Image 1 (spheres, rainbow, N blue to C red):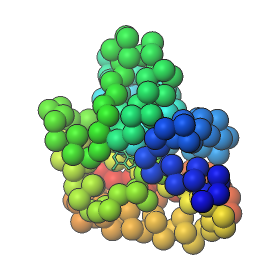
Image 2: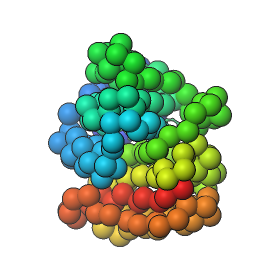
Image 3: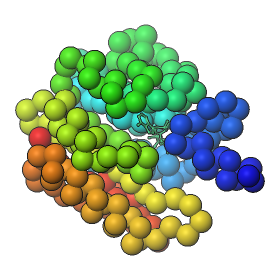
Image 4: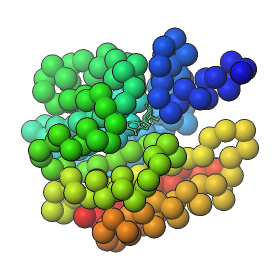
Length: 203
Ligand SMILES: C[S@@+](CC[C@H](N)C(=O)[O-])C[C@H]1O[C@@H](n2cnc3c(N)ncnc32)[C@H](O)[C@@H]1O
């Protein structure tokens, strides 16, 4: 396998040395930084809100959230130990201040969370989830009344297209509908040949 293909394969569950490089790429690639920032802006966080990110990677979006929260808290889960390690380094002061908590685990880790969230979001994680309907049903069950879910996806790879972005957004919309979300809407975060689309739904 070429170095490039090996690196691309890491984005599902970064591990080892190549996984650390994948995390570095996520944290520094301008398009990923913009996608993370715009998704957090879209959520219109209030200082007292509690938020959950699924597949937090190196923690870029959690850092934006932490800057906006006061009494509220942000929780990030990721099934990659390497990503949790990188996010922990990036968010050290927010973790120490009790504003951010990181959990190493996959979606089943949500079962252990006793509290609900005002916002649950993910960025470029849906393509790795085998059952979108089950995933969004789990999110729906962890949202507080008035809460909302945000799922951003921007196709990557050799020749990503607008059609790829739209096709994935339609899948997310369908899964959210099945999971019981209302007011489902798809928003283009920034334009491009293969735009970043965020699908939102209210609990
Ligand atoms: C492409 S990266 C995106 C990371 C981050 N959201 C960002 O935008 O910078 C996908 C991340 O989702 C995590 N991930 C994939 N499937 C997951 C699952 N089922 N449960 C938890 N984390 C998952 C991976 O470990 C990886 O960190």
